[in-house]
Image (cartoon, rainbow, N blue to C red; front, top):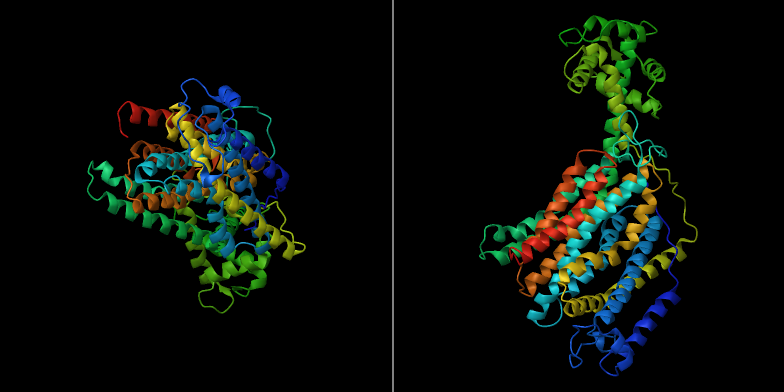
Amino acid sequence: MATRRQHRRGFPLVTLLLSLLAAAAYGRLISDGAPSAPLLSVIRLSGSPPAEEKCEQSYGFLPCTTTVLGNLFLVLTYGFLMYKAATYLSAGSELLLEIMGPGLVGGLLLPILGALPDALLVLVSGLSGSKEEAQSQVHIGMGLLAGSTVFLLTLLWGTCVVVGKCDLGPNREAVDGTDTKGFSLTGTGITTDVQTSYAARIMGLSVIPFIIAQFPKMLKTHHGQRLAMFLALIVSFLLVLSYCLYQVFQPWIQRRKLAYAKHKHVISGILKHAQMQSLGRLLNDDGTPNEDVIRKLFHKIDMDKSRSLSRAELHALIVGINFDEVEFDRTDAVDKVMADFDTSRNDIVEEEEFVQGMKKWLNEAKRNMPVGGAFSSKFNEYHERTRQEHDQLIDRSDEAVESVENPGWCITKAVALLLLGAAIAATFADPLVDAVHNFSNATHIPSFFISFIALPLATNSSEAVSAVIFASRKKQRSCSLTFSEVYGGVTMNNTLCLGVFLALIYFRNLTWDFSSEVLIILLVCVVMALFTSFRTTFPLWTCLVAYMLYPFSLVIVYILDYVFGWS
């Protein structure tokens, strides 16, 4: 299935260099080596640590400070650099995918690269220092883990609904490009395709490692905690591998689903056509097939009166049926009829084969029709339903896949962007974690809340901006791809990033004490997974549910940790 590849203009390197120079210049003023008293007197706020307190420079030369504003500046600077790292990784990934197409690269490598900034921040949050220091700083990693998941499923999800909303038609599906009802909570909304709901279900399954890791805490026992960590770690990386392999093989799965939808639509179209020929009712009052009417239909199709139907006669039947503008290969449709009816495999359909084949089709249609009322009046509804299933599964991409000029240069550019993004992320992940930790100490705000709110903005802003712009095109196709990307990002957070975090906890023998944090991840993921897995249309009011989950999550953590003392 062709997907949209969005080009991003590369950020000028001069801006990146200016950011580094600004950080370095600021470091000369606020580092312990040669402090500037006038500047420090301006920056230092009341309640800041005393002047004799020392801070440790990252890599021995990057700036550090013990003041509130100084650490705020560093958090913003390093956060901006992590944002650029994510942008470069995203741009390089998309360019590489355009050149090489879906397959192993798109399914295995690119999802991991997309989660790389978050994974590195989670890793360095407890990698260095003593065990006590790591236990203190690891809350930053959990804050990022929880914050990214909650941000994607609440603030970003709700915003995409708002910017992508269209008028809801009589069938309660969004009408592409039509937005005349303003901010009607029930009259506007977005519609996605069926694949998007599959992505939401996969996202729901991705919380399994959290449940495994939290299981001893649920039982209020410390026994088996390390075993639970190890099992959750293994399951996390198995889910990452499974998810990547699913993306590799997904095009084949979707083609099979599309072929099945086309088959059902051929069946419903022929049944509807037969019902409209006024030959009688295809079903008796008791719901059994009306064999006399089926034989009348056979004789009407049998133009040469040979008491058998040739491919040419079936093709004439298919051509004469209105399939509601669904594009079909008529020869393929004839093949589908032959496969179902020609049991003797002599390439013609005899009268008895036709009767038995129609009975089988009618019984299948009857199982898919609503209960109650006259059977003969329901073929139109069944036909409309199969058309909608076809429309939801079909690849209706409005993005043309064009050949790439000068692929050698494009591959070089893509690899350079990936290397640059990875280098920036690897270099500034540790200084950013240190700055957040120092800012937490200076302000006495728990590091979890700082990382929960601030760090996801740094690592997810690039994708968030792209998602909002893409959703604003107000088409079902664009909304489907947007929300699929959101669910995919959450899945990687809950598997790859959690796996890195669990490895950190296990191999450094740190304490797993994140009950309230895990609770909000489970709460938001499960609620949104159930909310999005079994429906494809979301009225505007659903964005309010998503928005409210964000502050609700913060309040839950605060109450459980600081009122009930969970952590």
